[in-house]
Image (cartoon, rainbow, N blue to C red; front, side, top):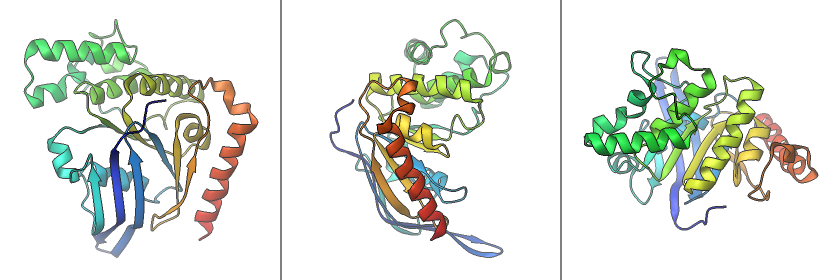
Length: 261
């Protein structure tokens, strides 16, 4: 496992309210969380509990109404300008008129990298996610799983320290999801990046994570933070072991408790 040194994400008494025409909606309340550098942390909870909202606060896409958030010791907006994170959304968000390589290089174009550096970084990222040979294909020529891999490559290409992933495999079938879970775990071990991962799947959270953050129904609060003691070698078959099932049961109990609050 990557060594944990330093703090990548830190929330203190974080709260967020949305002002809507139907009144205030409290999305997050008193969220305290520290994610160490190199960790793989999954956030899991009922639909609408604020998992994605939390990730959007990290990415400076939402402004908290109380408390503080720091990313690599900076404000989220400073971290955004410092290119501290890459973001992978639920949908791949690839432009259909751009080839895979041109989709992956889009952030580098925006950032003003020169052509040679763009070509090197794009190829490295494509190789990393196992899409070599598909550089000239268009998104509509690829399966859903391959499109998500291209989206991950796009988030990796500028070599950010932190990878924010908002339920990237939720729409995929179980076989493809399993394969991408294996690939993501291998990618994380090789790069040592910090990953904050939103999911609704208990097996996915346990299989991938060093820690699992269980959130309550809205307003989103953290009801449990569960260490995952599984070792670095995690074949899919590990999901049938007593150690895996014990962690999964604790997550399930935490979700049930948070839903009943």
